[in-house]
Image (tube, rainbow, N blue to C red; front, side, top):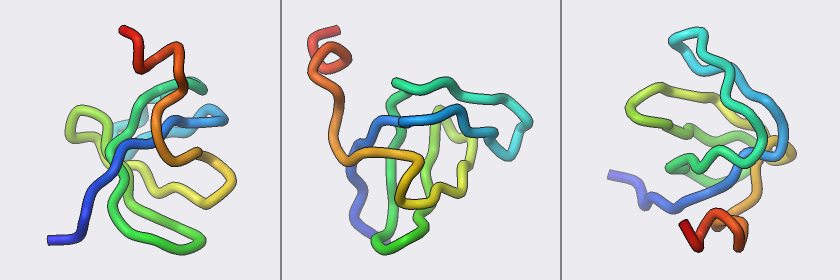
Length: 63
């Protein structure tokens, strides 16, 4: 299994379910490179490098 890490969406991104996740959503990221697999509560999102940042935003981490 690939290593997982947390990330934060920078732009709205649709999941496989059709749900659009807004900027600031925390995602679980798998993979490295220009595109990665990400998940929100089991919903799969194919992300490009510019759609997310690694780690959590400080204000989200304080929740």
